[in-house]
Length: 243
Ligand code: ADP
Ligand code: MG
Image (tube, rainbow, N blue to C red; front, side, top):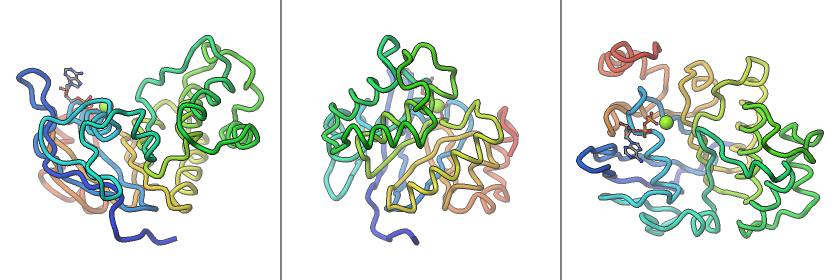
């Protein structure tokens, strides 16, 4: 399915400060339904902060966040989950003493999603957690915790899904598999923002990327074009991540 053209999310001149430090310094971007947008940039460039503000974990200090035509800057995460925004965490934080299935059930109950027990089972099956659904989340390895975090987010039926380094730590076969899953979600109309350092993965799954540096956008377009831009090359070669 080709992406629709009307953005579901518009972020305009977004500012976020931590004390005297400006983590987001006028960030502007949009994403349309069915699109996979990559957010790339060196460590500390503000990618996670952008996700934290859009998902309602932090209130912005300036600028606008518009979801589905409504201003949502400063609206709390749990309300945004009800409106159709959910995210995964760079470091997943499941309820460790609850089972895998209970973690997803809590999310489904907490979101107002229509997820029935059957669809929770289908999610657990799809994300390869069904065999370990009865085990406490504390028993999972890091790749399984990432899949649980994704399943938890999907159980609330988001229309905008924010993935913060979901693929980090997955092996090549797992990367191919999760790339197909993410593309399938977008093909059903979900808008997806992917933060990732693995450029091959980003190139494979994104329609478009925003390259960030020091809290602002320095490039917007195809990754193949991004890597030809001197300002992008400088930012990456000056940091620890080679493009
Ligand atoms: P990225 O995800 O691109 O690596 P982050 O958004 O996590 O970057 O961080 C951007 C900058 O903001 C970093 O310098 C980081 O130390 C700072 N920062 C992020 N969150 C906080 C916070 N809660 N308190 C203080 N500083 C923060
Ligand atoms: Mg981050």
